[in-house]
Length: 240
Image 1 (cartoon, rainbow, N blue to C red):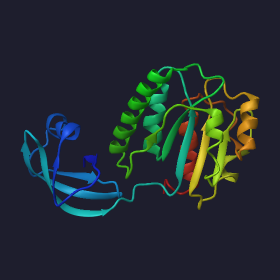
Image 2: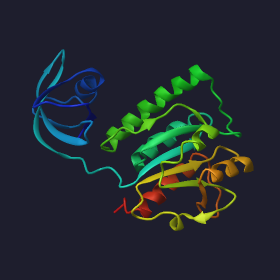
Image 3: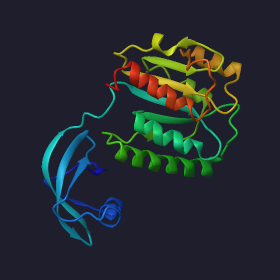
């Protein structure tokens, strides 16, 4: 069943804008068909299309229930900015896997280093990708993709997390030793092509990060975040 996000809904609700165009032009849905609208309170509303007009798609609520699709752990991914369009793939798949928030992070070895205007253009595209992935995977939220953040600023923001993990090619503890099923908030860092400088590792450790490994093989910058999220969701029971 097709899934859309809204701020709030009434018993009868007019869907407009891009969502209405998608319903009528791309999905070619008609009166009598059913869609799901998920609101800002994480409630999913089963709705029937009752009228299609030039102004939009009018739907009527059939039933409502709390969305149960969010993981038990809120993971913020600090992903070092990768070159080309690799970051788009990371964002799409991270949202499907259940990430709560994504912070594109600038580190010493990042090849891509966009200026302010280019970085904001990328962020807007990343946010749109996150929204589309959230719709496809039926999330209760659209994970936020923040502005590009330097590593020092990211390190200064870690005090509110239960656990902070740096996935480091130089070695660390097995992930299962750092993750407990009851964890609620988690920050994870993954590096760029070429990995982290030792001083960057020391910086994050000084702010409470613990280093972890994803095994004996060295993963690509675009593979590591997705492997890490998959392992975290497994160890916290969110693949059950």
